[in-house]
View (cartoon, rainbow, N blue to C red):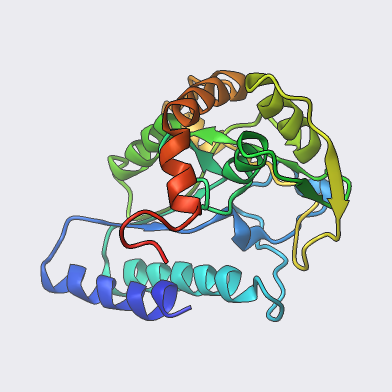
Length: 238
């Protein structure tokens, strides 16, 4: 919580002292909580439905407070401030102990671990390849406006189970999913409304299938390195 609240406040103060041209805050799609179906795809105007308690609340709520600090910075101090809300960015270079869904599934397949999926895997997400996400970030940065909030991602909605099958296909592996309890605070669907970002000229170039092919190739080349990391044999890893 300190990073997204105290840390953001300190950075905003530093930006004022240095008289920087603008400030970009990386928020999260988590600020929306679990939107009802009528808000899927989810527009930036949706205020969210987030719990103040539970194991995930510290992240969700601190991002929301960080956004409010950015709004205050823009509204009361007349500073150019922008907020981006990424939806599941992925790409080559992600560590297998990253704990996000794509490296989690990949690790299970590469090292023959049990693949546990929360609930039955019917919950949906969208996944944005890293270069597309950076393109979106840059579109927002160069936009000449005092204050703006933008979703970053794609509209290619897919279930967790389908994602696991797709990753398994790239590794030539059959995927056996072992259902487990749905994580407290988890969401059933998550998909961004990209109308505002598309108006800035944004258009994702990579489909999920194309992006996963690049990720799988990268993991194939670095599997031994990741095995050392996971076993704690790399310098600095405990």
